[in-house]
Image (cartoon, rainbow, N blue to C red; front, side, top):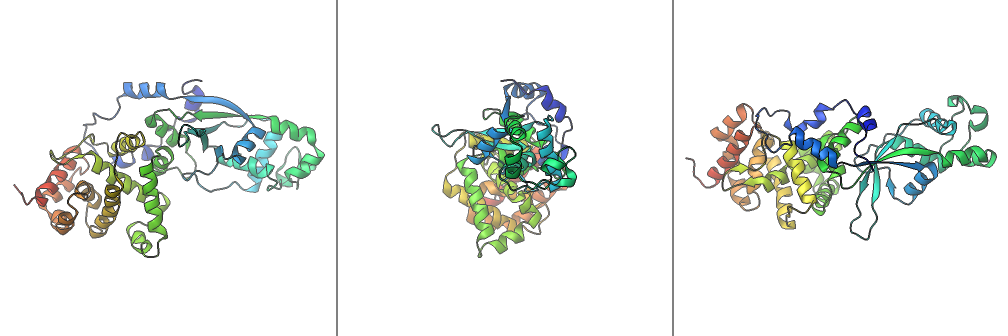
Length: 385
């Protein structure tokens, strides 16, 4: 076992700034005390374990077949290599060429009696190609084989196996380097690793990475809520009016629910403060999801339902309102205990001069976020002083 290795850094030197700073990009407040310092980041890095293993092609096949290795976690795309590229990769394996390493993340079982399993983070196309070939689903393209066209061209695995047993045996016993991001690695660095490794033509976005990393019964209920709204004939029209097809494709709807959950959990209504916000909304949301995963924060089903449904209602009534999400973030902490009053006064809140003033410049700073939270409280209590 070793800490993050130099090979990882060689492959991940370019930081995807848009991804890393997604929700923080419009915030210019210098106050970010809760965001890890460089020293704290290095400490988290030291706790991060990436274990180098070697798995044979045959072992990889067995892991996929037994569902110990998942090639298609929900955050992975379904883009498949064309046959020319698949053929070239299989030929590389027959040639014994060293191929780039595969990265997987270790996922703990539901309880202590269940084994951990793995999800592929980087290398899906290579592993999918191996699986299709060994399942006799890939016909190797004659014109794209540079060394074995006369042997393997126009043939599938079983046809090749019958005639070239030695070469097939060598292929099945050949090994790939597999880097395992262990289950107990800190979520902060695990999140960063995901964003750095997913640097294809279409990068993973912040909420796709969140769905990959954070797991808990609460997040499963959010997933169920989303699916019900997408699939229900009576609910899907409203849902699709609130979120565009691209929003849904990139899980921005999940991001909105994650944000609502985070602002609800972290808002100190009595003092008018969003605790731990510090002008870093992305990091506050990530921390909240991690705390929920670690069972440090518990939300009962009834409150969760009110938060999720309340988010949709507020999106609907604030649809054409400037600064809609900022206002929604300030309102959502009151949705559980004061839903009726909140919805009755939402138009007053959305048009309030102090609320609008807080949106004019640097709307995402800590001071303006706290100002809006307190102002909603004042308007709900009819205390406008």
